Length: 401
Image 1 (spheres, rainbow, N blue to C red):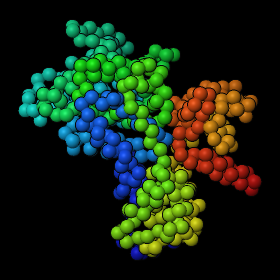
Image 2: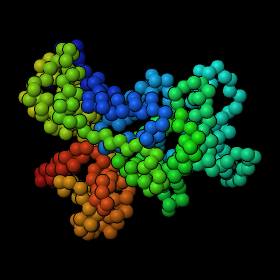
Image 3: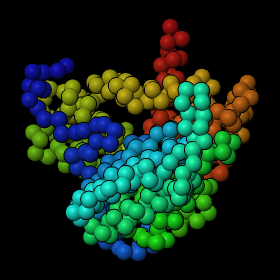
């Protein structure tokens, strides 16, 4: 279906993880509020948590926050958290490292030489393992407690920012929903972070944190510390309103030499439910596969099966695979419902699976589902229900042959 001309036609859309779209639609109000947050010396909430489903553009917003904060004179550090940061000591080491990098920047801006390896000063492990030999380490005047180490690191960052005459220092952490306290493993990374952050911010609000993650982050914060609600402003990022979704398609096309018919734009907005990643994916796919400038609904209809297959491979298949057989059964049972599903309903739907509650917990941990209200669950991936239903239909067709 391609045409030689397609090589020279523009593709103004950018689909990717954390890739800034050509036009950041529907987020002006939130960005204005963030701008006010940066200039307030004592905001009502000193930190922000940014939550939402996959594909809502949270990472793009987090990066935009960092860009705007740097432009306003703040020194910023960003990091994507991973499973290893569930260990409080590993988390403390990471924050110490990030703090050290910001202190070095502040010292360079202030013309101050740094003579101390601050990350080593902030945190030292309690135990060192060499081969099969484990050695308990002792230090004079240095705490090995993760919360105290985090507090010391963040306090030093605030002091360095003040000495460099900067408005402050901002640490922005993505995938922060992974920082869930686990009593069974006696690991409390989020509690350590909140305690250390509170310690530092009692002395100075020049150091602030933005945590970004799936909706489970909100519940994790509440469980970790009862005072977390006073520390963090909860910001929920959702799909775009219809007009903003139209702008996300129409404005990048303007001046690009390409155009989508109005009924096609309406179809894309409807099919994607206004989620930013999917708007970009649909637009980018159509522009890459269609070799003429004016794209219409018939072009889309001809490509829709291929587009959905590519979307499944790019966004859904790997996530479905990591759920494992038991998890896939739960996901498929959820897909048969139109909205949220209760744990009791899932147990009744899967009588042969005696471990439904355990499977649900693992799916939450893996970021595939979340709990929007007590005892009820929903998909953490937009359009995942449609994918599962589409997949079940294909499977049925395959067996039918």
